[in-house]
Length: 189
View 1: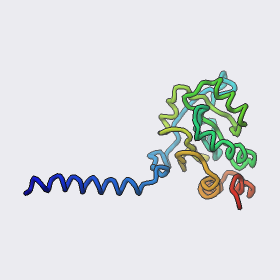
View 2: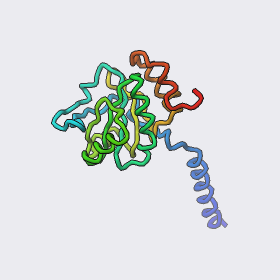
View 3: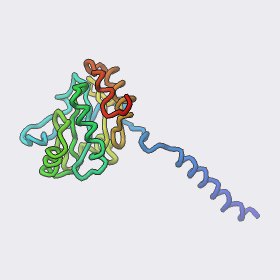
View 4: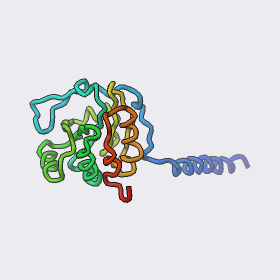
């Protein structure tokens, strides 16, 4: 009799895990880096590979790091929003071109527009690993002290931009994020 209950108990445990898993939101994977200093890096600038840019160089300003690649379909979906948002001047956006060929990345930016103050080349993906990148696109909001305050997994949407990123940028004191930035790409805003 007890042997017959073991498969039933295992099934019940698996069912609990399945129900729990279905209620999770994959874009809300907590990052252990939130409220911790951004990883140190020094990478070549995509359009000027002889020039290096380090995390330390960005201290003193609130900035966004957008991890992207020319081979990334989801990056293409979010890219027009980033291009429009960059025009508001609300906060500088730095790109981290992840595991990509420089030529392909440059061609992609020429074709679709360049929202980045500077885009850095992470061809080996090592800095992406340091940031805990699961895949592209991912976006981080980093404060003036170089501390990661937010991580967005997946494409930035108009709603995420309006409801999460912009309020945080304002709170962190990134100048005066223009009111026009709120309506970028948001229908009916």
